[in-house]
Image (cartoon, rainbow, N blue to C red):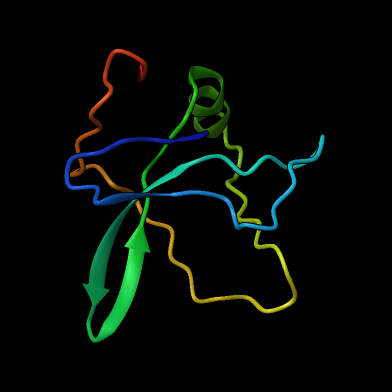
Length: 93
């Protein structure tokens, strides 16, 4: 999956200043939109699946959320059908 530029995104979030990519984990640019969820500030990103990932999910594969560290922050995963991706030439459903 890739983070995608989407209508309404406000900034790019880069890796932490002390981040070093490894063979296992790369920290790429994340396109985010700053929003409020009730009285809580949030950062929203949109993730686009590759055709192979879409097929795997259609066959029943699950989605995993990996959080680095020892404390799990509040997170939410949702279907984002109403958010338009900007780079539509790169993304094929």
